[in-house]
Length: 85
Image 1 (cartoon, rainbow, N blue to C red):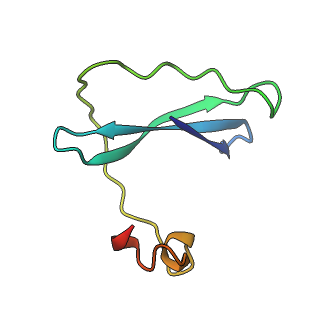
Image 2: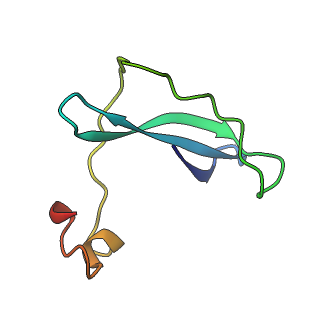
Image 3: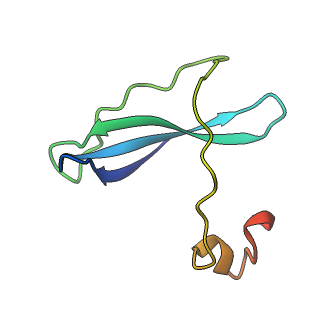
């Protein structure tokens, strides 16, 4: 699980909870499980609901790739194009 620090539209600081979902064929989707308020200080981990165990069904929206030519994944020596990463 990854948390990404963000400020909401009403200036509250929090994080988006990103969790990998492993599909039956082994492919992985990164699922944004939502926004939670940040911890009291920047050195503490926020209160994040636990990841469900076992097989799950999710409902959501797919979002188009926002990678640009300036993105690190496209300019890294180890990853010349997003497709080869």
